[in-house]
Amino acid sequence: MNAVLLSADLPYWAVSLLRVLGGLVAVLLPAGTVVYLFLFKMMSFMQSRLGPMEAGPYGSMQLFAEVGKWLQKEDIVPANAQPEARIFKLAPLIVLASTFLLAVVVPFGPDAWFTNFETGIFYALAVSSVSVLGILIAGWSSANKYSLLGGLRAAGQLVAYELPMVLAVVGVVIQAGTMNLQQIVVAQNAGSMFGWDGLGNPYVLTQFVSFIIFMIAVQAELTQTPFDMPIAESELVSGYMTEYSGFRFLIFFIGEFATAGVFAMIASILFLGGWGVPFSWFGWTTIDSVDNWMNVGGPLILFTKMIVLVFFIMWIRFSFPRFREDQLQRFAWKVLIPISLVNIMLTAVLKVAF
Image (tube, rainbow, N blue to C red):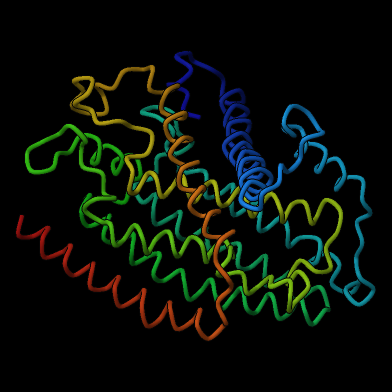
């Protein structure tokens, strides 16, 4: 995290170590929270059962038990995949690395950030597509038809839904006038609507269409139901993960839910004001006037907004049936993209007019 947060002059190695530890917390804590709250508990309640209850109070230690179980399992490389064993083993790490790269630009407070890119959202959209390479590599190097089909489906799906995601973000960038995520947070919390600044100017209201499109695209990027064609247990066993076991399967599992958490953080930054609250509540006018306690309160606020958004992602996952492949592609190219383009034009016209 930023050294200013520590209010002390630390050597470079100490700052680097703190950033690494902060990155682990920023990625793994949301992943663990999402798995326990939603995969273990929320899905259980929706199915009229209790879910894990034995490992720790209310099953709170079940996640650690699952990790321990997967770490003890044998790391198997299929015989037909032996010529490409190195690539086979590398694929899960590429998927997880894209999540860590995505978290680099997330601002957690006025001074709590890893790096403050001027083109932060451009970087985030670029590195989010790196996971596609890992999925393709996993599908191809497994030497398994189910895995290959899963990898190809994932590539086609992620390419189709990255475009509406990018177009949804363009509307926010036009309104904020910047691609810096920290400045987008400030623009929402320091802004006003029709001269009233009691709620700031959260873009979920002015860019509601973009918000819906972005969340749909996130659902598809995460390959969550109804966009889970790349995994499709009834057709492809486990898709591109079919041949993975042990800790490599665990890395895929962590990457899936950690990415859900980080994407939800980015969505909350773009549309819900991120780590901030309306500046008018405390008499703040600029980011420089924000009190230092927001470097502690900000991450908690961002984490809360992230949980709310992941709740909707998981609610849809547990409630809807799967699209057919043709329906999935048609929805992206014939519905989401045209609506996104219309939203961009309207935003640009209103930006110039007002």
